[in-house]
Length: 259
Image (cartoon, rainbow, N blue to C red):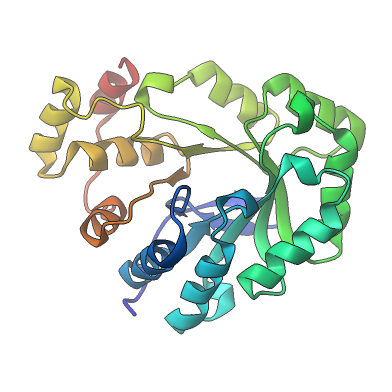
């Protein structure tokens, strides 16, 4: 097992450090999910993102156990299916059994149940956090208005809102509004909606001796946005993690912003 590189972290409430580069597992299933998660841990990732609806919590849990790493070394995220609203305690118990752990580091409402913010579900997540089954709680795919509804009802903002983010989706005002509320924006699908052959990206990549995909992932870090690349190919898993031997200038960041 390779020693973890020094990955920057973002601090969540409670002085909980979340590594800013995590391994996403969406659409990875069966043996592929387990092998990919194991490969990520071997490369040095210490942040794994899964969800009950991905159907791979068991594989992620086995990869973590077989890695030989102490549980406390890996930041583990899973998510509450919206259909489990009202059965939150059963859902977290099922996730913990599948993952083979006593707690997760971050538990998210995967998307707004029935399209609504669901303050009652949010209050239940806070209670489950206070019970120690998760260290932090947050949401995914929530709008600002829905965040405000949760805050108004409970007096406490989600630690994280996990939403799609990429150069094409970059929205400085949206990012600022999250930060004003004390909510960390965590970006998923960073490469899905990105034209990696764009001349801006290829030119910056050539200047740094890296790939356009690495430039996009590094751009997230320059903005302070935790990012979740996903791949099942060991060489790509390694490449997506090799983001710490170069940085982007303010001018390069601005050019990517303009995409």
